[in-house]
Image (cartoon, rainbow over all chains, first blue to last red; front, side, top):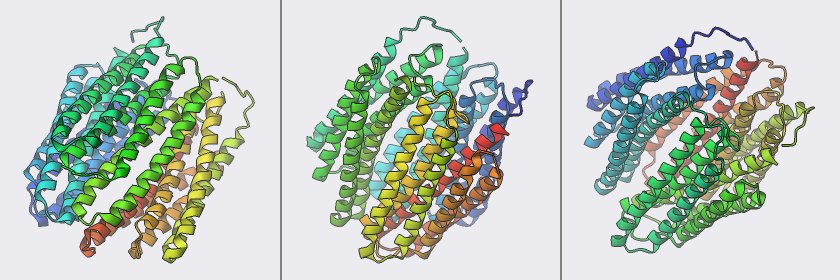
Length: 206
Length: 206
Length: 206
């Protein structure tokens, strides 16, 4: 094992912040997608796939660095899982975007925009929080706010499911819409896992 | 990091037992829900949500304590994953209950009651086993029995799926029933993960 | 804890290779299943279930050994997760086989065979790679190739979903086919997780 005995710890914060900023891009592209006409969608989803690809590269760099470095600023496993959870956020948003194009859905219920707004807020708060890991600054506030947003997302998701089953008579359209809405909910859950890991780090180090 | 050098180890067993007892409540409420009329259901699901909330609080206490304590009775990760897996049992049961109300299902196949009976048995055995972690008492018996129950649950789940696809002609009703039945199966799987973790602890310490 | 201070480390490689060879059997049986007539299928799925059972036993042996042994050739957690991920490959393939019989699907789209070919290739490469863990021999090549295959599987999966939603008018048949195709995709994802863990081990040790 190659050991870096003077690790540039700051790189972890920078890489995690970069990864979180890709989720901000991803969530904005999802919002853009919802407002776009069908012909514009493919091009937006291509940019979303690109953001997902960049996020993958950063995740990979973090993991590789963790495996090669002897001293890490926090518990190695926490950092590893934090990178994975951020990558899961991105993957679920990318998947939701692809499904919207693949399923050629012409119109989505209004509340899907609200789901995406929750994701945008989660992504922004997460991108703001990552650089604060270094000084463990205002992390509890971030965790509380993400929990609140995840709860809001959960309620939105349940009421959306109720709405779909009440209003959509075509079972094939229902299957499509349900999968999109479920995938957006998975993205919110992934942001909550990120916040739980940040909380775990924050408690250990305080 | 604040270190408790004289940790009250017993608290972990107590907290894990409390968490498992919430799953017993959850499984009983699911059984009650199946026998209830539609108007009674909302109130039962509200109690289920309350049990889920209490379980969340206990899970959170366990994890916080693990992060703040230097000495733990068992491997820290095992305890962490054990709390998470018990919480997953509760979450899946709560989710199944919510879906039954949300989807306004008037009647569920008989075998769903059998699925819930398996869950009740799993929850009771798990609540009985948690206090025995301290002395590693009769844990293999517990693990064997949960494996047997999970196997039974798996067979029930597969025959239920076969039944649904044979008998339910309305695709939208099929989607609803399938999701409920799949979510109950997830709860059984989560109990199996709990037992695997208990087995892992038991082997390490023996 | 019983300590084996002179562990026969080679056993881990042998057990992991045996586990991976069960996934090769599983993938071949899936391929056989796709070409079989409905009456032959049950018998093939019974052999698949048997392979899954044997894989379970090996996974269990690996985990038990990890818990009882003090010195392990690699990071204990990596070996633990590697065994779990290989077991997940087998479970998803077994599940896909069971669904094909349970859902009495008379015909599957051609591209499902291509999904299974990807799985066969993944399984073979993985079975070849496990013995090379000992000398960390040509592992990056294996990881790159699995990533390529997973990407190919992902594209196949998405185009299959598009095809199903375009061509299958019967929503109940659509639900069945979608679940089979999704489960095969899960198996490919599980092989990718195996490769990521191998990469992680390989980076740590190099």
